[in-house]
Length: 51
Image (tube, rainbow, N blue to C red; front, side, top):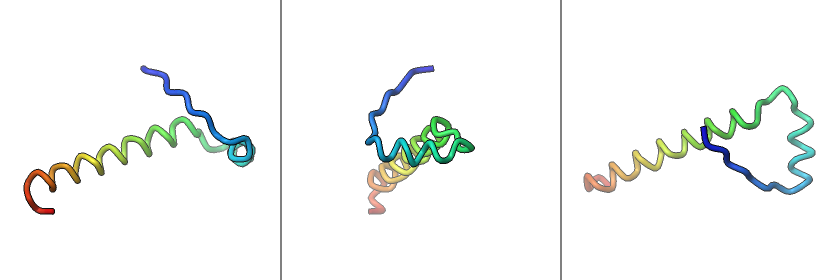
């Protein structure tokens, strides 16, 4: 599996640390997958002339 490093503001990191029950890496992975699906669907609609 590839590694992806992100820099975030310190204030955001503090807020994230207040929720140790959330696996932030897994959450972000799912959000990236969701966004890629949305973009793929948009491209399909665009290429089919529906938008």
